[in-house]
Amino acid sequence: MKPSSIALLISAVLAFSQSSAAGPDNPATKTSAAAHDGQHDFDWEIGTWDTQLKRLREPLSGKADWVEYTGTSVVKAVMGGQANLVELDVRGSSGRIAGVSLRLYQPATGQWTLHFANLANGLMTDPMQGSFKNGQGTFYGKDTVDGRAVLVRFLIVPMGAGQWRFEQAYSADGGRRWETNWIAVDTRRKDRFISPTGKTTARPPA
Image (cartoon, rainbow, N blue to C red):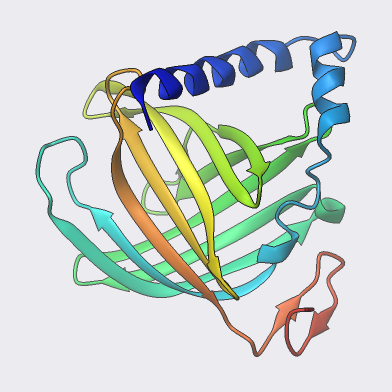
């Protein structure tokens, strides 16, 4: 993607953040809600997945040292589908990553906020915000890496039947350049599927 296009994306994200901070009478907020009802964007993910994860050991350091993990991701719908919880538990030569991701739907904007807490420190990250378009999820947020403020981009990309890729990238220069530091590939387990209503079936619906 060209730097100018990335800059436009970041500008759009920041503009959205400002508009969502306004009250329910904000005309821009109403327009966004009318344009997209994303409450069911994550319905496909409810259930149990086998996770293959690789993580860049030292992001934004110039080093290309990746470590790999395997494990599971369990996704559960809560509050009638307006929120969901992800339980991530993976292990590798570098140890274990166990965490919880909370996704919350914003009816006024048609977007989602994503929050992640690593059980190693018990702290929740600042939220990322975005939505799905043409089957792909794109979310942006802010974080701090070794004392540096960075932008965060999170992509959720379909790979085929029952398989999805989750990519996280950092930018330390305002979105001109991105470095991917987290790639997880989830493959659905076909022995169990939990629908958004809590009903368990032998396999996910077609």
